[in-house]
Image: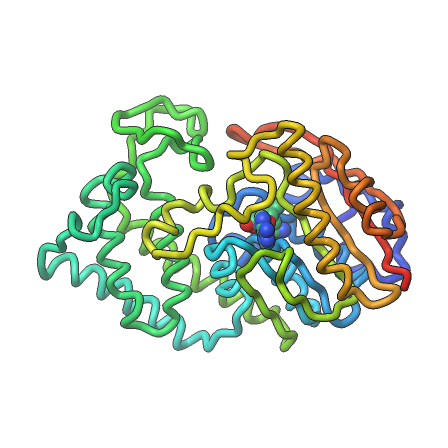
Length: 378
Ligand SMILES: C[S@@+](CC[C@H](N)C(=O)[O-])C[C@H]1O[C@@H](n2cnc3c(N)ncnc32)[C@H](O)[C@@H]1O
């Protein structure tokens, strides 16, 4: 039976006895994307329940995630009362992690976000907004004039209201949905869709999106609801997130490193949120991404990847206290991690293997992911 009694995990639980091969029915999407975990789509994230299992088993006071991505481990740690520290090279991912893990005054948040939405509507009615002036080549290509104008009108409000970081995430999420892309191709679109098309996801003729305002409205409400749920669950545990290359980041001492690193040639993490970089003017540090898809999967790419990951794990493992644990969740297709652990002199406790079931679209594949659990002995 797949294991779903997550709250029962404790330091004595034998992980090798747990069946972590969840199918959709065992751990449905709404559970995997509960509360703030779905503030914005993100390709390649942890299942929160998986993070929860390792936190309950190994974390005592402080967990570190050197590839924190959308902040899954940090969110789960904050719920369990464990201080956490995350780092990521992508400024958008850091923004998303921060917005997810903050403590909010809920009444103020709700009022400010709805006022900002109403101010956007008023702005669009009051005068013509020169969308051309503020437009980049990317925005001109991927949005209709109407959608672009609506996004830019919302962007104008961002610094006029408190909770500007939450507004940035709402804007980015609406911008993702308002791109002229096919519904089944939201992750890796290559060409804008300008005509009606047969939609593999909805099994009917669908039309390219023409506006952004309905998304801004829908995501304003959805964001408020998700944050409201999370704030009831989070504890006073501290959460810190920094943007930087984890080969150089100064990490705090910790008893657990829990992370899922990028993998060789699979995803371009900056590019997957390109619309956010374009709209929010975030700094682009893609040249420091480890294992980006644009570098491919060649032997040379694998060697560069091993060097990069080894440097990060070396840097962070220096801060793991004696007896602490390093958990790395990765689809290790080329079996690179046993060598990395050896190089670092880490002692393997166990390697778990988990079947990942994917459901729809271009990601409808099944594969195994390895979970390397290493001990820091001294
Ligand atoms: C598999 S994702 C992590 C997902 C995360 N566990 C979650 O649940 O959202 C890997 C992350 O590593 C980040 N990354 C890649 N190279 C990095 C580097 N040199 N330093 C820090 N982060 C890096 C990417 O931006 C990406 O967010």
